[in-house]
Image (cartoon, rainbow over all chains, first blue to last red; front, side, top):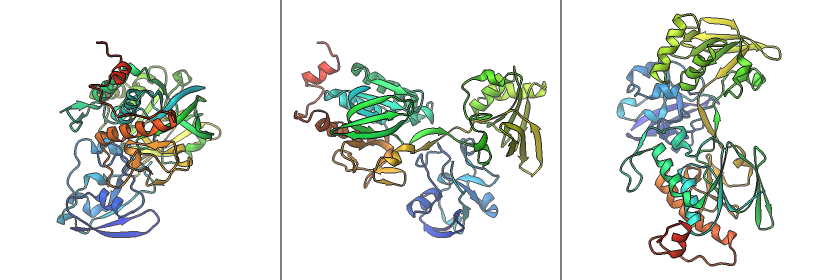
Length: 106
Length: 338
């Protein structure tokens, strides 16, 4: 279990307990947190679950697999702290993670 | 006017297999898709990637799956209307009148929406002013490359479309290629070619830059790009091209009075009909308790929706359940000669 904080574009903050093994994307979708579309369902094929990770967390996350950076090229306003939230699998180590959800996904 | 029993919206695997199931039970159908080819997400998102969970097919690619489905529906000579998006639906007595973006019209008894997550549309620049120039000096696809001759073009993106067009247009235009990072997702040979052209001064490559703003009166005149570290560069540019792939948009489907929840259409699991009689939804676009977004689920949904269409297409006939192995009628429809 990890507490994940999602900052949405409307300046609201949602802190959710997400079970280990789910992804940051699923945590948002299952709890109706707006702004993560996840069109492809977690297949790293669409870039609509794009989030900005709080800088201090960047090094603590599992590194990007081949393909994630390619998909991020397609994301709406990608930055250096951009990740696809479907690739961030929850574990105890991610307890306290904070992500910002972009204003839109495309 | 195209008169047929059923109109299928979406030529992905689910739509294709539904056409097969309609054919088996003796109904005609035509298929509309916004892309220029059949296959849907399989072709657009992962043509070369393997799929391992099609029953009885241990491994195949998106392209192989599509080709096999096309082969499977060949006996039914299904008519495809590609590069068309369904815009308007109108119920006239017991039939539907349908119109596409390109003005193609249909008169059908039932509609099956197999639209995936919506139709594929180009992803656009986040910069707001871009909208103003879209279609006159800013494009997301190229229809007529001759307009770029002897002009300055700024191309954004790092995939094959961006690289291929940068290479091709560099023969006749002054090309700036701008990409957000040093790595590219396009083919390695194209990346090498672009770097060579850059070294030879035949093209200007800017990496770790993204579009900051565009300026101009009627047409774009000036483009500003911003480096990761904040540096701004500006240059004159007659045209801006953005190649960021495609995103799926539900589009006009939202306006058809269907119950929609989180970009999906609610259906019953008996025949995958929506809240609107005569409109069915199958595949990734439909939702019901327990829905799995798998191709195999789409096949099942298509088989049941096809049978659901029967009562609208042939209201005075009774559909009898048959196996293709033993049904003479089904085998005749498949064109099997004994």
